Image (cartoon, rainbow, N blue to C red):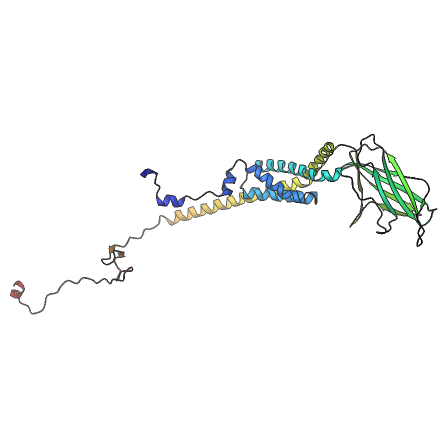
Length: 345
């Protein structure tokens, strides 16, 4: 029983292991690094592919430092897995957008309230290689004899990897429709183009010349105008696989190389820190060797105070605990003129 009792000094030296230290030694450390880095990446995934890739790289480096993962091969392996998982996350976020028919129709930006081109769309939104897709656009003019040339630009692509750009001539559907009111004379021309599509994901825009002036119909943005999305000619699973492949390629091309640079910089910083620590330890060791062994000062004698029992140094004039003064004992001296007989008696 007595052997199980540890000295007080040994108990004081033992301290509880923190959660961070346990994680650093855990076999699930690699998985935790990947999950936390991807959680930081997810909110930026739909903003910009280059920005989100940079955020993922920085998050991985911070986790390497926090969990003290300094093995470069482990870092590279974790990076590859994290970037692949990030590509899947980004693909899942964009899949809903790619498979949902947009509600906004394409129009020109010459006038927000009365655009020259309006109602641009394609139907159906989803199909296959045998489906006939119909592109239509409405052109508004002030005359029923305007000289109009309408074209649809079809961009056949697999999300990021652009294929062939098709510039197809559209055909007028019947005669112009009179939509005049008391305040204005207005005529509406409806143009159409039908075709088959072989690519999985496509986009489109309209170019129309009205009496020599060119107008574009697309999705209005702050910077101008952009292509409308659609149609798609594959099922959801095939689209997800294609988009995941494209995102993986883009992340590794534009973001993984900067990640490698950060890993090398981190490794160089850690090595410099270790070298500095070793140099400092060597300097202290050499300094101690030159100084020689420490000179021990002789321990001053002590005695016990008769009043309070405290240990007091021999040179003390009074007790530091109770204040008791200490007097030096004087040996008695013989008196002058005293005879030897008196001393003997």
